[in-house]
Image (cartoon, rainbow, N blue to C red; front, side):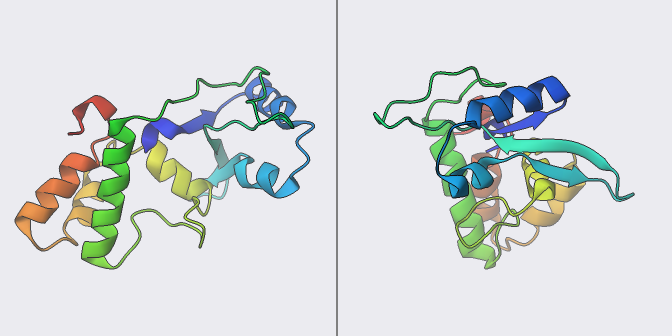
Length: 152
């Protein structure tokens, strides 16, 4: 959901992010959560995006260093979003957001879509038009509200 994506706008935020992940021995994990670059249509880098995440130490407890963002607790609104994504996929045969085979955002552009969710109504309208059943479309639209408090 949009609330799980962080836009890293400053070099200080990027440095904080990188410091947090220093010492993590699982390089695949570090690569998975590394900020993804988003380039505009002009090819110029516009932003970096990361999934709000954390890692654990050898003792299994979350590493307690400072993150450049607030973590988001699991909630019914996140589950509602996930259900909306699943229903969209089942009804259209397409993924909502470009993703990898592991269901991770495929690129900075995919993260930008999530981060900006709801700011371009014409984009959402085109997505929702792919759902032909009116009741199903309404359900998905309710589940995929950009603001968590507006989801059922």
